[in-house]
Image 1 (cartoon, one colour):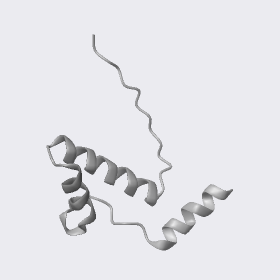
Image 2 (cartoon, one colour; image 1 turned 135 degrees about the horizontal axis):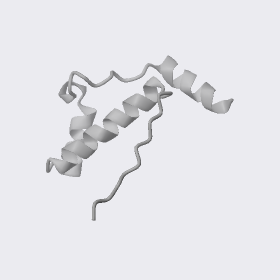
Image 3 (tube, helix red, strand yellow; image 1 turned 120 degrees about the vertical axis):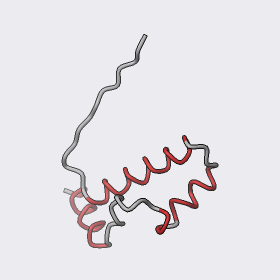
Length: 72
């Protein structure tokens, strides 16, 4: 029997949210491809190893704006 997954769409992602999701998906893909945990984490930390389509890291101002939104 096939398992159904519920798709959740939230178009209200901040730049910080989008960056974190992309990092998580990249990590999961590396692990699925057979990389060890240590190697996958090393690749994530090496910005020159990231695909060109990934959003760049949020600025400090983006993080502050995100934290201010959460306090409201």
